[in-house]
Figure 1 (cartoon, rainbow, N blue to C red):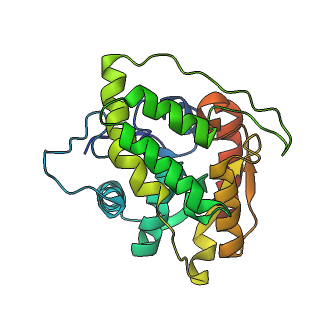
Figure 2: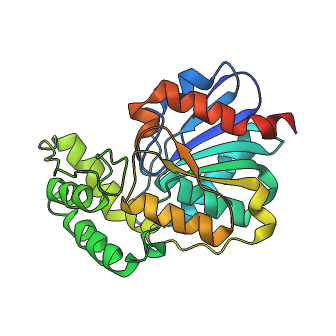
Amino acid sequence: MRYIVEGAGPFLVLTGAPLGIQGFEALASKLAADFTVVRHDPRGVGESLLPDGAPFSLAVLADDLRAIVEAVSQEPVFIFGASGGAAVGLHLVLEHPEIVQLLVAHEPPLFGLAPNGEMLLAEADKAFRLARDDPGAALQAFADLSQVFQETRSADSKRERIILPPLSTEESGKQRFALGRMAPCTVHFQPSIPSILRERIIVAAGEASIGQPARVATEMLAEKFGVALRDAPGNHLGMIMHTERFASWLRQTMQPRRQA
């Protein structure tokens, strides 16, 4: 498992699935003055290897995250989980709450929680099955379903289909893994979170993700958990597309717990 530690202050782990070290670079640079920021490549992404035949599941990803947390800090840490990384973070909090000071879970794509969850999961699985033979078509199908590249600020926002460019050979390999093996682990997760963990988790979604499946599922998660949903800058990819605003929002969101 490859990870990078930078900055000073309380430990903050940035985790994604499939977002890794490179994807979080800009956000980390905005936070390193206030936190000791840890970025890592999830198993099978970047320089974190997944040997042939090795087990792979959400539990495996969460245990990898646990190992990284325990390697860098003897105290509970802050965690920001983006998309699939939020699902990994939720799994970690359920299994090892003692090592998590606070998890900010941003749009975990728990499609099964949405009112039309059965349909969403069926369509997602179709896209995932495409990934082995045609990663580009799989990515387009999943983008059409999830709308993650869209910015929708109201329920009646106009949604024009975004046609993605062809994938390079390298990107095809990445998407074959991300959609074929990693994404199925996260979209099918339906956690049952005890109320005792309420103080350790903040549930957030993009202010420009209105009506998108990941936001709708996150709204249902917050309702099920009995907490208020926090609006974050941008859409599902706000931490990448609006990095400075997002870093400021994340810093402010975690500040009350830092002072506790």
